[in-house]
Image (tube, one colour):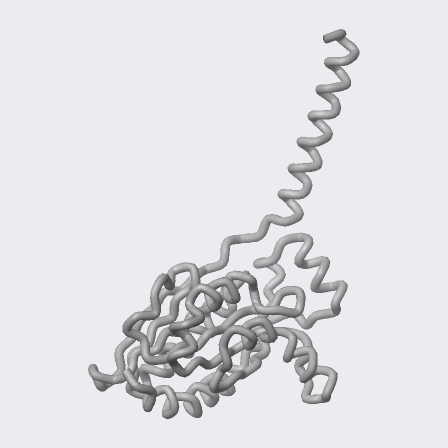
Length: 214
């Protein structure tokens, strides 16, 4: 290859490498802190509940952990696990499924999980919870927007209950492009999770899960 041709090739390769490095830097974000936890209520024969979640930054993992612990405080046995860890639903009497929202929908790993375990989920009580930062009002437009978040999930499994909770956006946990997107959609930033409201929802849900056939 002529010298000029080699130089052009090297310049082109260097440009491609620089673009790749720029994309990697713009999309890099810290790995979320996943939580796998189990607890046991007072009754060793009580129903066993799985709280499976999908998260991008770890906020939903923390909510799932709180939910599982609240169930145990109500006397049941519960586990909080990321969906990637849940390979079977054998031994569980009910499920609580939760996800963060991206592009107006639950994270794809949750809907893949539900599709894979659709038969098992359809045979037990299932509740949904969503952690989100937009469409927070009770006006018709906000309610309609929230319905989109779980539309694919509801096509797979009909939940016995469904709740939407304000989440958390910590810029330190986001990629550069994610931070730009947050600014673009004018999303609130900070921890807006209402732990009392989440606990109240679990308390209202627990009796129905406790009575599910084991």
